[in-house]
Length: 206
Image 1 (cartoon, rainbow, N blue to C red):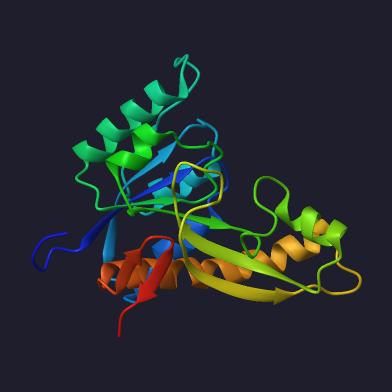
Image 2: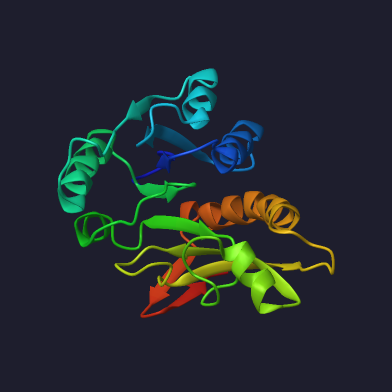
């Protein structure tokens, strides 16, 4: 980011794009001062691409099918991001683990949201993991991405109670609602330059 220019976001997606839509809504309402420079999907049939098209946002289908190595795919992704002059990369349901090629290109500038209170229940099916363990509270976590799986510095977390009769579907739906405002809040902190990363700890500046 430079001067008074709005923060340029890239949103990486693989599926329906509900978090993408929440970010778009926050920008269009004026709640978030930023612009989505591009949406990148590794899936040609991702509904998130339709959402981008409806709002006039440039979209790129960037399939991993033609790349034999994850690092090669990530190197090509970095080129796309740089061509769009991106300041912050948002992973919104992007179903790929990033390599250090990507992480090192955007240090402390890649955000992911995970449907659990990390460090509990990383990886896939976090909601079912929480139910199987019998926790009383779950939620979502926005964190910077490092070279591990859901191990980066935590920016924000929102707690969601687990109900006695919850299924993976009902708990996921309530957590997803929390994701929408938590992700937007974390992005706003970045845009407003209120995030200071010190080792594993993220300090929120006044």
